[in-house]
Length: 199
Image (cartoon, rainbow, N blue to C red; front, side, top):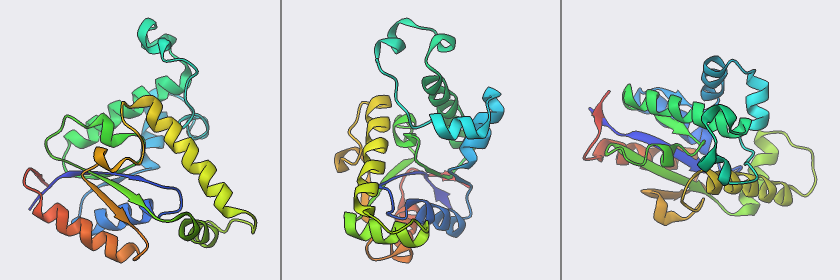
């Protein structure tokens, strides 16, 4: 069976990680999300905790990228470069599912790429996040919006696309019908993909 390299971008609380992990298991291909943090830590010599804290921050100026070498870049930019290198490496090894970290943009030149965006209404995501992540009761909708804002800022800074804009993804799927439904849709898309690579 020939499968594509699948990247999953997602709104906070939409279940994108759960969908990606289940999809990878169904297809029998590697899954990468937090695993990329471990791999980036090993590659860079930095701690996993530091990378977690830094990876979704954006630099204050795009000019850094124009006038500085990789070693002179702000640390979060350096981490992004390391993770991008790792993303390209794992994609080169064969079909896989990669969640987040601008992977769809990093791999945009690949013909075997299937990029996906998982979304859902704020109220649905707030309710799910509170249950799944066991967050304390409060204004979860505001919390979810703040998380989305951070993801959007990170993505928009490091890519030339707009986070969540369906025109920049091959598929956009609402998770309101559940993880199983989303996985089945994506599994069918992967099995029908015309330009995949053999697993």
